[in-house]
Image (cartoon, rainbow, N blue to C red; front, side):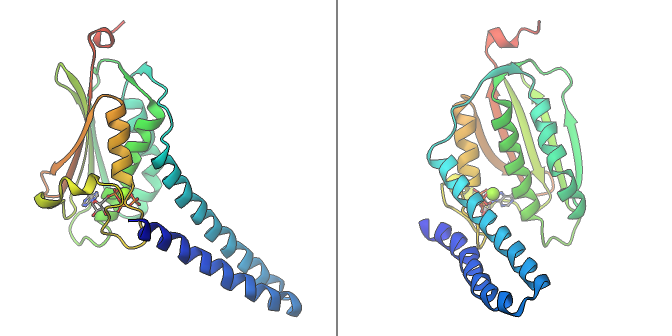
Length: 222
Ligand SMILES: Nc1ncnc2c1ncn2[C@@H]1O[C@H](COP(=O)(O)OP(=O)(O)OP(=O)(O)O)[C@@H](O)[C@H]1O
Ligand SMILES: [Mg+2]
C-alpha cells in the first residue's frame, strides 16, 4: 500500500534530481532556454509531489465537514463545470439528468463536489483506451427518503468480485496512483450519514451511487 505512494513520489523526485544536476552544467554553458525548461520541469515535478502528499494527508486527517442546508445539484454541476474541458478533450460525451425538485439537504457542498470530481475522474480514466463511445451520465433523484447522485460510464465496469475492494484504501489497478480516491469519497459520504456503492451501468460500465438521507426538517421546502 505505502509502496504505491513511495513510487508516486519517487518518480518526480528523481526527475528533480536529474534536472538539478543538469542545471549546474547548463548554468556554466549559459544556455538560458534550457535552464528555463529545466526549471519548469522541476516546478511541475515538485507540484506533483505536493499534490500526492496533500491527498495522503487529507485521507489520514479529513477536514471536518461544514454542513449547510442546500440543494445537491449545485455542487454536482460545479464538479461537471470543473471537468468540462478535460472531458471534451478526451472525447467523452456527458449527459445529465438533474431532478428539479430535490428537497434541501444537510451537506458540505465543497466535499460533495470533491466526491463527484473523483467519480468523474475515475470514469474518464477507465475509458481512456476505450474504442466504443465514451459516455458519462450524471443523474440526481429523490425517493422520499434519500437523495441520490449517480455517475455512470460506458467503460469496462467494475467486476462483481471487486465491488467491495475498490473502496479499500490504497487499492488501485493504475500504475502511479495512490488508490485513495474512492476510500476518501466513501468516508466523506459516510460523514454525511450516507452511502456510496457501485453496480453496473446500462452500458455495462460502472455506476457509482451516492445516497444522502434527508431528514424530516430538511425535507420541508421553505
Ligand atoms: N469508473 C470506474 N470504472 C472501472 N473501474 C473503476 C472505476 N472507478 C474506480 N475503478 C477501479 O477502482 C480502483 C480504485 O479507485 P480509486 O479512485 O480509489 O483509486 P485510483 O483511481 O486507482 O487512484 P487515485 O484516485 O488515488 O488517483 C481503480 O484503480 C480502478 O481499478
Ligand atoms: Mg481515483
